[in-house]
Image 1: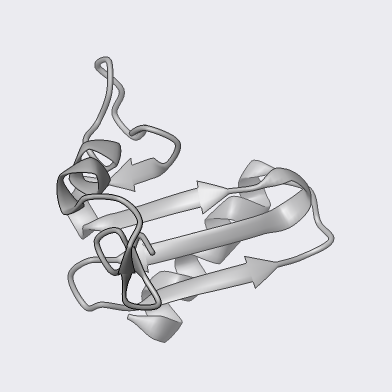
Image 2 (image 1 turned 90 degrees about the vertical axis):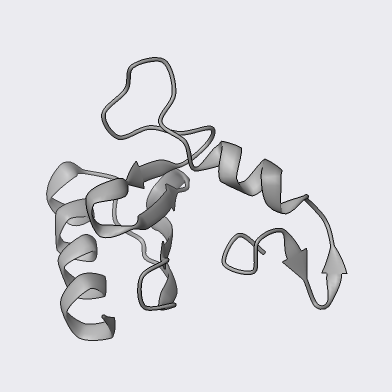
Length: 90
């Protein structure tokens, strides 16, 4: 839905403006939007769930991924996931 600017299966769930607001950096943060991590320098948006679920969208090339693992949300796991998405799918 986020990749498609608020639409899921052809149905509008959020306005495109709402999605853009989610992807804006909030409160002076360098990487956090509304409910997601934002990386403006590479046009990426990411969300991490509890216990290893991760979703990633790259606006520059239209790639995206959803990965479920049984690992924790440690910084090293997150960095490995970012690198995988950026180099293998981008």
